[in-house]
Image (cartoon, rainbow, N blue to C red; front, side):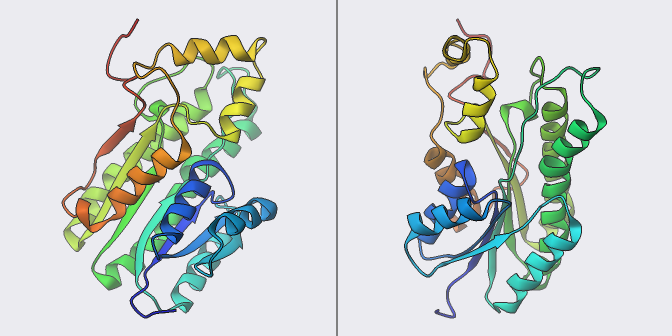
Length: 254
């Protein structure tokens, strides 16, 4: 492994956006540390990459000791930390009065606390280096509400507030923090959400009609935006919300 190689840490790397992002960075000659709860998902990611530039770690991002151990491993590689990308996410449907405390805390634990813990343990490394990129994965639910998604919207709104504070607090140290906010992306999470509907196909078509481009995003399309925001091409980009939703949040459509 070359001393010029840089490290990227990606949570949720076992499927969906996280997997596509891990593959994209690894194929661009980055050393990728991918973490996920699913060992089989990480093995699939490793097969897709097909190189030695991938380290798989089973981590629950809502548990501080596990995230701390993840970044101790990062430091042990003695390579520059280029970017940290929290992609791990879960979605639970339900009205506020129907949600159990466990469902609420699980959703916020992964989506919001997990993102904060990734920041808590990466920022000291970035500070020592005097630079780095933190690219969080929010959602269109970071910028607007969605009926029946109380916990999910609360968690994703929180991610956006956190990222904006990171941009202000650590920007003077040369550390950039941004958020990518996709609409529906063709991932296993999307499939599982629509599977809960009475008529999944009709539900999917209904949501697709709200997108001016007429379709949902592909995971690789999100990965490419994340890659750009983490790259030197975005050196003056800090604290932005990159809406990647085909125009769905631009205004009323239809």
